[in-house]
Length: 65
Image (cartoon, rainbow, N blue to C red; front, side):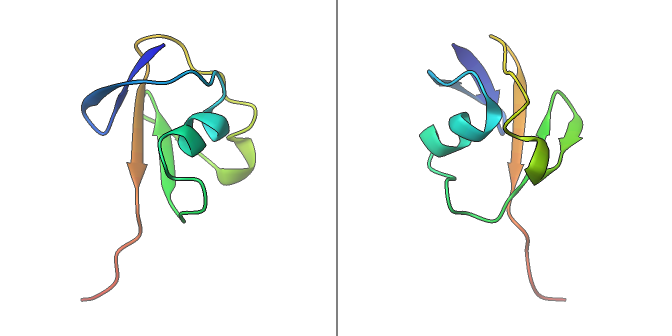
């Protein structure tokens, strides 16, 4: 299926957000996620089903000031 990840179209085979993040190389990374503009907690990623055309945002925490 084709989803938009951080503004770029990507092809993924996984239907669940957690598995899609693994496929995209974010497996062990500490990141914040949103699907179609809605925040998704780490604990909920396994339950979120992605559909063709969904928009996924993946953000890494930043340090500094």
